[in-house]
Each structure stands twice: as C-alpha cells, then as structure tokens.
Length: 394
Image 1 (cartoon, rainbow, N blue to C red):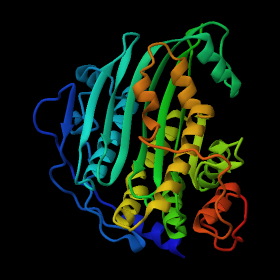
Image 2: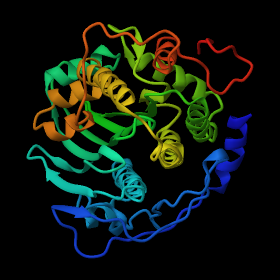
Image 3: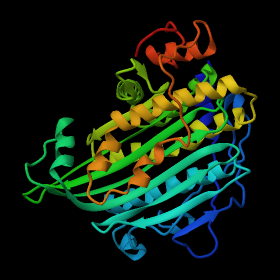
Image 4: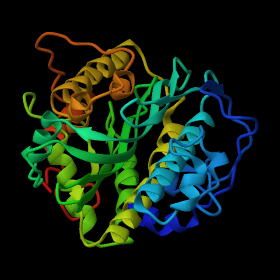
C-alpha cells in the first residue's frame, strides 16, 4: 500500500532553477545558497532541496563547473548523443550535489575539474567530514582515447563483440557514493553512463549502463519500499517490464560472492543496453537519473538526526568493510577504470569510505537487528509485491 501511495504522489515533484554566481574555478568549495521546495512523498514530509532545471539543455551556468567539452562546441553539436549525455551527467551532478548540500550544516563540496592528456576529463565533487555526510562523492567523467587490450578484454568478457586490436572510444558518465555519518541513514550509490567505440571499418557501437542502489545498515522496510517505488515509477514511464528485469539484474550484480551476501537491498541496474533505440534508451536513463534525488534525499532527512550508540557505529564500520570488498574485487567500473590509460585513481576510488572495519569471524547475534539485515542481504526479496512472502526471491 505504501508503495502504491508513493507512486501516485511522485507526480507532485517540482523543480526550481538555480544558477551559480561568479566565475568557475578549477578547485573551490561551494556553499549552498538559495532554496527550492520539492513536495515530499508518503510519510517523508516536505523536503527543502534544490533541483536544477536547464531551460534549453545548454544552461551550463547551473553546473558545478565548466563542462569538459568547450561550450561553443556543445552548442554546435547539441543534437549528438555525446553532447546530450555530457549535458545530462553535468546536470545530474549539480542537482544531486545541491540537494545533498542543502542537508549539510558542517562542510561543503570541493569541486575539482581535471583534464586527461589522452583526451577529455572530468569534475569530481567531494564533501568530507560533514555532520550529516562523512563522505559524499559525485563524479563526472567525459573521456576519449584508445582502449588498450586489457580494457577490450573486459568488454569481451561480458559478451561485447569487440575487435582484436585497440579501438577508439568515447565515454560519459556520472557516479556517486554517499557514506552518511549516522548508521540509521543508508549509503546510496548511482551511476549512469554512455559508451561509444569505433570499429575498424568506421562503424560505431554504442550502449548505455547504470543503476541506483541502496545499502542500509539497519533495515527499515518503509524506506526500502519508498526507494524501490520511486525507481519503479521512473522505469514504468518507458516499459512496465523494466523494473522487475533491472531489479533482478541489480541483485545479481551486487553480489559479494565470497560472503554469500548482496551489498545492499538493491535497486535497479543494467549494462550494455542498446535497444530498442538510442533515443529511447537515453530517455530511460534520463528518467532514472532524475529519480535519484526523490528516491534518496527523503531518507536522509528522515534519519539524519536519529539516535545511535557505539554498537551501531561498529556495525556500520563492518558493513562498510563489505562495501569496500565488493568495489575492489568485483565492481566492473572500478576494474575498467584502472585498466584505462590516464586513469585518475582519486576519482576511481572516490567510492571508498573514510573509515571501515574488519573483524575476524564476526557474526551478529541471531534475532538482532543486525541479523535481520543480514538475512535480507543473503535472501533478496521483492519489496513492492505485498502478496509475496517475506523470503520471496525475484
């Protein structure tokens, strides 16, 4: 019932334009100014968060930094998918950073615009040691170059038809990982990306990938239903079959195999998506990116001031250790980034928390809240089907 109520009320979400003042700089701290009102959903109340709206798709002053590609070049090629994706990832970064900043009273984002000698660059936004966010990173990259054999092999391993030789490529993406200070606030990750490679005969292969997923330390089923319900509403705009497909894909992908656990309670995930058509998939990715703020920010507002103690903090640190294990051992994006020439390791490893912990042979007490979470991580469930039993698999 809660999920259906959420879906009905998603239409009430609004937006307000916000423009940065003053020139862009290579590295600076931004303080939140101005306010927009977005109507909250279900039990989560009203949210004082800013969501930016580019009026013509080229209102670049709203971004956290100057775009990677020259603005005049973007204007001339505004209908190309490369330009459309660069504008989308820059806007998504700005929307999310300012929504996070509106909740943080102690700290601001460091904005670091970087270039890559092999081609392109990125904008990394990081907030550390805040009162609400221990570490929040939101990264954009728009890069070109030549894929070496190691990176080509990574693509072949997941079924892409790639030539034997090195190939030219273009990639644009936005990714974020949020590690809150309070253990009652879940960690959240999202990533949306577009990739092109040029075949030896001059033809082009393209595909999209991405997703949004939630990693709580303490299970709150209302929160998880809100999160999944918001993502389902975004997917349903394009195909009612997408959510179930992407939800299962997410559970399978974020699997810490050596632990027999999922990293979190899932969300949506897809990769190598090149059908039904480029415009159609881009519209899907746009809807999913726009769902990030309403899916997560209300959860932070709801729990950022919850009480917790030493034991809850230690459990949070242990679960962060699992997060690190997945990202360094299994995550495809991390491995691909490390294989790419000119890799910027600070941005690739931005997803890691400031602090984490490992204990030998740790097991939570049966029946505890910690054990309750672990059971869900070991046995993913369908969060939006009230008719299914609690242990139902997708």
